[in-house]
Length: 239
Length: 99
Image (cartoon, rainbow over all chains, first blue to last red; front, side, top):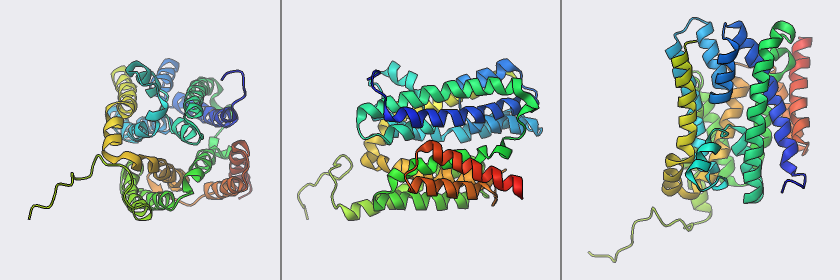
């Protein structure tokens, strides 16, 4: 599989490079907030949680306690647990294999995995995207501490529009069915409504309630799907 | 930042990811079966609106919206991801420079 150019390489690389530059801005930001290089590398390599790292640095920089910083970051990280059920079928079946894969569960790697048409490409896309993105994120963070004020504000370059645009491209394949569209629209509405009312991270967790109406739509479209585990055993009527 | 809290952040992050691909993942799979296939649609769509409209815990309208809209247009025209990302960034950056 390594001799042939895989179609997901290009998209995985494009994503990783964009994330790498966001990593540079993280490095600049964390450096300015007084984090030393070793702590920045440890955070990017071991935690590797993107936006949540900005929250940690932001809270501490604005005078919040470290406990508050870690608490709000972990709330933002909680969604990564939700990717588990999505990517499980692409991961090794052994426990050690899964525990290694866990480090590479970021938003983009499950997204790239489910975008592939077969399981083997899905697994390849997960590992390729997860590992390159991880490396680019660490490299970017390190570069950021060195670059300091050279590149200025990342928003000047429009990098804050890069991530949502990536997810627009990634959500499209899931909008092909009515239930997919219901899930997406309800989730967007729930998240929008929750932003002013809840802590960062919570809106995305709350968006899973969109699965209820979506599942209802699907059940109506294809009555009695073949998932029997949850149904009540049908004993004869004993009136 | 103190080391114990940094380690807590790293351990907590990894723990949540690992929980997803092990226990939680199999429980969710067993309880909800194929509904899991609809999770990406919900999660990605929530991420898009939060990343586009949220700033410091509030809903805001800024030039990200224009960039993401152009990115969506590029996606609809079946442009490669690189073009989608580049056009979204370019539109946002140019509008910010002009206005």
